[in-house]
Image 1 (spheres, rainbow over the protein chains, first blue to last red):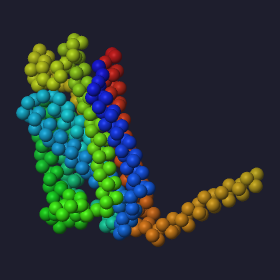
Image 2: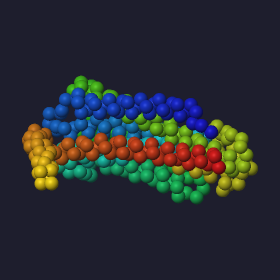
Image 3: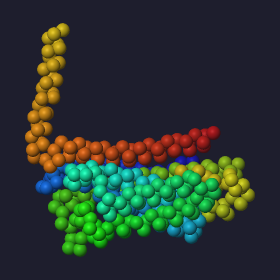
Image 4: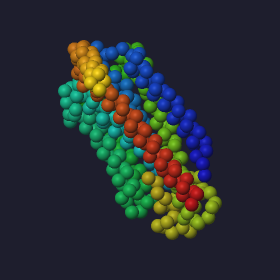
Length: 258
Length: 71
């Protein structure tokens, strides 16, 4: 069993992402001008914002795949959501670490309970709950459904995080790119940010595809083991009719997906 | 013996002394001083460590799947 086309796509996207990230490092440390008031610490912005964007993208995928999984019951959708949720957790963790590293210089404190920071931390905990639900629910099919619901609920938080700096009195800087009157960022800084956004997106998509491929393989192996036959598993049929003769505790429903 | 020790000491003083004077200048011109540089370094390192850790964990799972295939 091979990763096949998924592996090739993952390698291409991930490779482009790594190259883009290396180029981003060159831009950040050798090319882009230093911000006048914040100084060198402003360079954290070029990884903080792309990480936040990727985290939102990942959790958007989790919610979308989870919603369609609840509707169709296709195992591939659950595996998509799981792979995206892992990436979302990683990049939200990056956001939650890099933000305070900037804040301690800019604000004089690592953390303050202002709306955007609090909601981002809440998002991290919601997706921690996503993994806990998957691991602790005894019935694997129920675990996937509960996790899908958690993923959908968690994604509601994303637009709130975005508008929190506009709706509430917030210490967090206002948007400098997504503004009605257009970006107010220096053109070189804007270009560096765009390179960061593109690189991180490609990097995430590459690793996400790889994780999805591994989840597919794990499921197919569990399916084969449950059936006791070397025939390949169906590519993505709903779990319940896929192995009608398999016992509930050992069927493809029990396939370890984490 | 003493000559080589003196050379090592001299090298140490030069290595520690020259950057210290440069760092003192940086402190004057950069908001946050050396802490800002340190934080930028930590932030970029965190990205590589976490993303690298994720890739490593996926490759471990891929190896585990391959072993189960062989078994």
